[in-house]
Image (cartoon, rainbow, N blue to C red; front, top):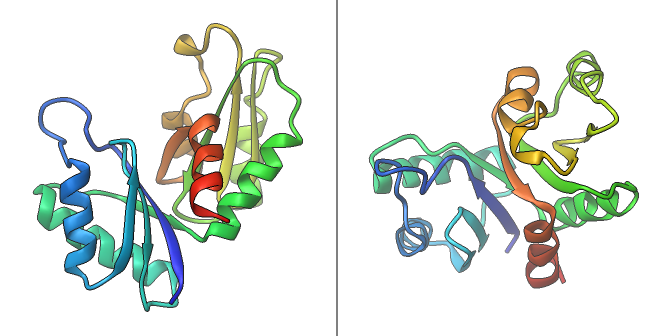
Length: 175
């Protein structure tokens, strides 16, 4: 049975967008899917399911999470191989600051990629590879101009994780 990794967008932020990991697991298991695991309480989920299409998996998860949470939960699904590729690509970037990865729902157009990457500066760099955007930010990363919101403006629905979490998930879920 195929394994997928799901990344939920904008949960457990503020008082009204709560979806605890126990509820996430229950929603996925309620679909009849197996080997469900979570990491942290930020919407990182590993699962096995019989569906063969990423879009089918995303749609089913979004419906289940929406019912469980009472609000829309955009979900981005990758295969373990895709997540490993994201981590491998990160290793090729030499940057001393903070490194985040925004996972994209859809593959961006070349023009959209150019528009985003052209916003890079010496302190803030965006590199797009497939459905992942590497945001490499300087010491003042809390005031960065290149953010997940900017990624979404140019490339569509995205959710962001720091590189440490990405690498941890690769170690735990992609072996």
